[in-house]
Length: 286
Image (cartoon, rainbow, N blue to C red; front, side, top):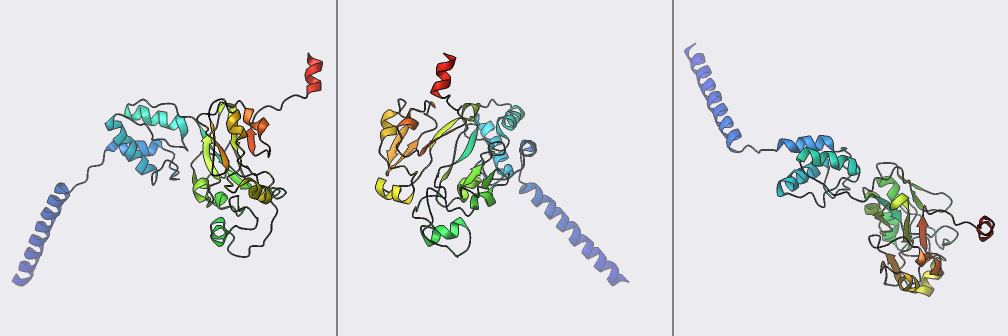
């Protein structure tokens, strides 16, 4: 009986000492987490899409709290929640936040089935990444959309779908939150985030083909040939031609559309602009 009591006493003493050691360690090595991080995380939409540039909403919340402590939230934005959510976060942290322009994903390829016919048959894994790794794909254009829908699979918001007639992805403006997942999934970088624009109006070059004009036109009838006419016509210096393809800087573009009229291949696209009235109708109204 004495042996049992001694064993119980020893075990009890060991347990007590271990408990005291664990308690001391928990106090000494405790990691403090600002309670505001949990509050901001709850305010964020919880999509964990990575569109903000961080691993998830928790990481963005941590960055927002640190930014508030540093006195600035510049460069920190939740594309899913948008300005409404960011305003709530700013109020929670006692900060002011600048109004950010809404963004949207834009597909910079106009190589439809009619304009860019197939010249080969691909029988491998049906993903854009796999097809791109194998070469130019099924058309003569080594820069355009591959049409396998990696962007569609990457979108968590059902905001992008493949058009069966054109073979190209189309973005649903009502659903797109500009998280950038589709842009990251595209191996040819034909999808980019641009300003949504006033009333959703945008002007952009729908081509990324860097081949010289004759080669590009042979692969796709709507390719940019890098002629530079749009660059010369733009009064705001928003257009540059580099590597045989033009690009419109959406931060400088004033939507005057003068570039559209001088493009010989129709590779500059306009979105959501009103359809101009026919000349006859204008004369009747006058």
